[in-house]
Image (cartoon, rainbow, N blue to C red; front, side, top):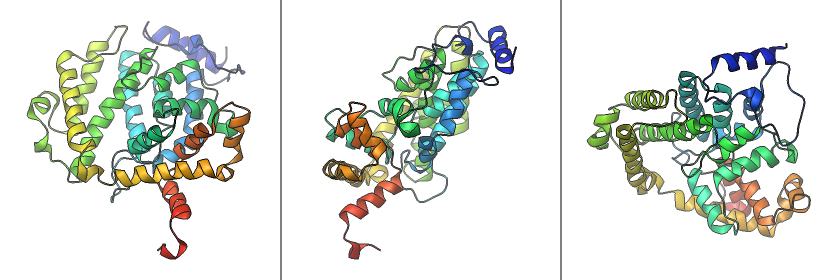
Length: 335
């Protein structure tokens, strides 16, 4: 018995009956030899961690566009906070930590520059539409590794695809990530909004903070404890009615007062304009797109509109700005 097989045996002996076992994965699209050390979900986690799309998350917007300060969240720090929340819950429930970590680290790989503003921009102009969860699946299945993809297991891809509220993950580990995503952004977006002077702690509705807590630490503690308590030894990941109502109420408050706040989001119109102008430019200048993307049109059967979305969605904020300046700003006006 090698090290991987010993780990799989420990999973079988120690994890919850509701856990997704590495040894019982539905497998990969392309079969490949097993590692002698790492179970399949650990390998997936490592592949995501080392891919280029993951590294680019450090220069992609979470909520605030190019904020002035070192402590605002980026798409990468958001991803790490989702992963931490998910692993805490999974460990307490004796579910598969490797699987939740892989899903969490990969769930936003397809996000555009400039956050949800960039997502809306591409969705408005692309005839096929654009959804960042679907794009994350394209990243891991097609776009990474020069068009070969990461060849992840079915369970990880399913969790990535279904991490949005409208999704229905087929594993409890996927359900944990879907809920951990909300727990993370509700709390860190409040923290960033307070740091940016958009809100104060006192602005948060008392009907929700009296239930959840009056600091980020207290709210995280309340939400995570509630999920663990009410999901223990159950075939679903849930919150109590009281905590879920307060959590969703706080989420609605954020949409009304931060995500749609003209001070916090006043620059988004410019970001949307940049993305949509880049989209139209590349459609007219396909020769400027790297060959690995263009090959998808012939070999993969994708449209040129989808391939342009692939290329733009992979850009960091700073690279998108650079290309916009290169194409649309006269040289003499720069600097």
